[in-house]
Image: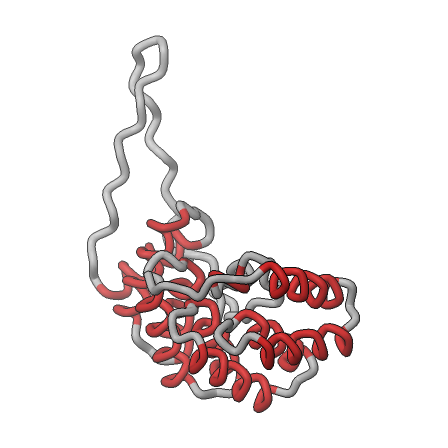
Length: 225
């Protein structure tokens, strides 16, 4: 994981105020606050990430991408900035660039789970690369422990690629010593998984700690990206 610049108390307080404005729906005040923070503390990606989220919500995707390019230039170790850049590039139809940005996010922090999920959906839905999608979803599941719908996506990709399904542990015997019942199987012809919706970017403001860490909001609503 890449090292991040240390935060100053004044920067944290200013960032908190801008985030509160963002959460309250005061977009103009929040935008001004993040712009001022970016000028005062250019070593931090988080103000620019949040500024880009505001620009993206206003449908200014070109401005958002430019802002995020600046964010990763100032703090190349910010996995969230790279992931948000990938999400914006995906929205603009720049799918190969988006994949590169997600991979840069993973290189910055291999434990940043949203980047793996975003890369998986992008690879499957937009780049026709089920092998990379499977690897990304399995890594995401390993990091988060999330079951549905990711387990279904993994099962469907394994079936499509001809990869044997993951072996599940045998059910534990109940207290009376009788063997546990086997899990029911899907009916013949039933779909192997829930369909994957198009990935959506993050939309939550980064918490105040992220002025120092460069981290942003949580994972995307469905698959990220």
